Image (cartoon, rainbow over all chains, first blue to last red; front, side):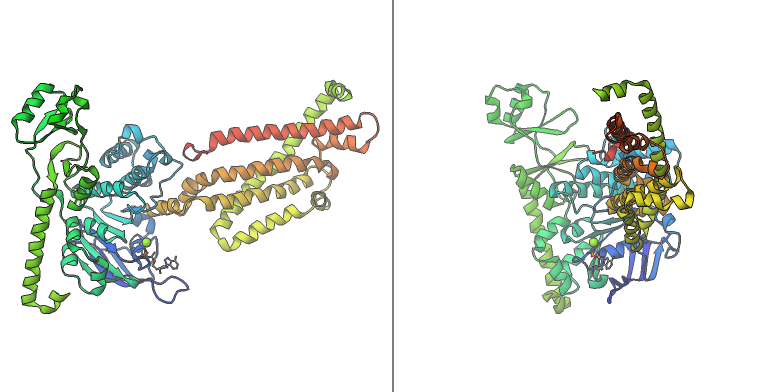
Length: 392
Length: 217
Ligand SMILES: Nc1ncnc2c1ncn2[C@@H]1O[C@H](COP(=O)(O)OP(=O)(O)O)[C@@H](O)[C@H]1O
Ligand SMILES: [Mg+2]
């Protein structure tokens, strides 16, 4: 088993009646189990490049090698059943239920009923939709974010080793998009699919990509490297321009909550505990606030000392707990949540919403400091080695 | 009051009922043939956009031919009787069906078709399982219009030797001024209207039963 899952060789697309090719001799190796992001300005040929991989668009010339096999001329329908496909508009079938949508490829492959049904339920669960609630619904009865989850479930149905995604989160509101990105990254940690992901948004590319291909006109790669390299060592002016300024802020998008030290020994209480017990625990601690968890350990409310002056049931005291983030969220997401939640802290929860720890603004500032130092170190080092790159 | 007496007469009732049956046969057979031909032509026109204009254009031209002339054209070929009217009615029914099949297929979201293709669904399966079900509400509307149109025009089949409710209407028309003529005219016309209303109700029910729940309304 080679490390290369997809190999594109001199892949070219010339649309009929056009002078210059939309994709010009694209050659690229996509490693097994990684997310490779194609990013570049609108019209540079990202979509064309992606759609040639499953031959929705037939290449004019060149070769596509999938897992060592030349698939440039094989039966396209057979090929596509081995490749998951998610597009921005999702394209769920409006006339059938969510269950039938997700079952599309298993049905094409002739799986038996029980196996398909079990797989559909499993997948809906994986993308965070309760099968009992959503199985028999129709696409029009779902929100945009839920439809996108179904789109991902449908693409994963027959467990294809490769996934092609064309701006999959592009048409979704920013808050839902962040959540879907994080969920998808968590999923990918388990699935380890080989994924080609198209976006025009460099921030999304940096967040999602194990490797990023920054594409110029005619889909010519300006740089194909890890997000870290792209940020710290842009290959040329095109890349530097495209990545833009504010590289510290961009680095915040590179660092994940799980990579920094979070506070795990915060003062906790349970929502069903006696009010006096809670009050005493708060008074005896050196914390100014206490976080109440529900029976499933999910954060519920923040309590401070003055909240005990009012005569209210525990479940209505203090403020509702907001700004919840998952470990695979970036520091940038966390910062955003903190600002929205106006508490100055974000609560870290696992996939089920159970409390894991607390992240506050100071933690983020500390890690910015560390990055600055590391950056300075890098530039000092590169100056010694190669003055030219130090200037870029 | 003469009209009520006319309606109350058992022989009137018998002949109106009988003619309604003939009328239904005269329309539903052409509509059935037009559905098969029209949906086929519509799918073809959608597949080959260059043909689309020609096919839809040809079927619209039929509608501009005066109906009497179209009925008459086929008489020398197939003789007097129901056959010539039924051929003419088939041609009339064709346009709404072809046009709505084409526009119904065009109305299916591109992303839906592309995602089906991207999952490895072949062209035929895509047509049958995705495109036609989603185009169906528009197609059904075309079939309904075709049927109502045909019910109306079928009333002149009698002039080419056919039967149906035109028999009663023209029995009145030929004797206009004499006793009972107006009643026949009105009775035959009303029966056509009632038939059309019933057919319309039937289409409502067919829509309820055949349009998938996910795309209703
Ligand atoms: N079907 C087509 N026919 C002709 N030109 C096309 C077609 N699709 C895309 N193009 C052109 O090819 C180029 C690349 O398009 P595309 O791959 O969609 O870019 P991107 O996804 O990066 O925005 C653009 O200049 C676009 O206008
Ligand atoms: Mg695009």
